Length: 192
Image 1 (cartoon, rainbow, N blue to C red):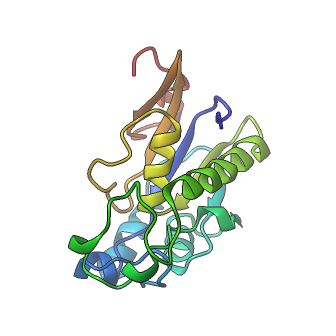
Image 2 (cartoon, rainbow, N blue to C red; image 1 turned 180 degrees about the horizontal axis):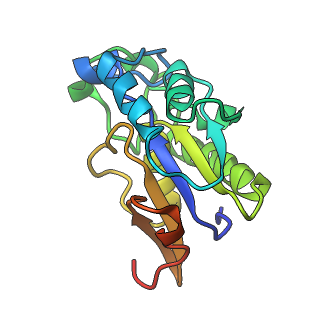
């Protein structure tokens, strides 16, 4: 599936107890740590343009969105939830099976890519042109997005509470750091 060619932001939720402890928590309802809450609250101090906010239904993403965008309405999209790691839930991250595989009792990589594509496409097409779509979700959702956009999905985990601006470019997409005045953020880029 090809995503609509418009810029958007993805944010991984704040640090959780599972992140801190090195445990696999896909569908497990991990909770934000003090550091995770502080990181999410710090996002509220950044300059943001007018946004339309989309959030995973999982607690850690919902809590992050409330702290990062206080008072702003959010649309919950079920397809933004983290990957179900099945029998691997709760185990050490070192025991994680290959990401492109289908974990026993869990969700396959192609299925995750399909549902993330549905969620992003919905958000991108439902957001008015004068607003920036912002998605608060999970590491796996960011990985699936990178796959959809032709980037490497299997590199290091995205950092918690670090916005990633995705910008369409000729023949692909560019990842940027949305800092400073939103009026200076790239709307398109010339290189990938």
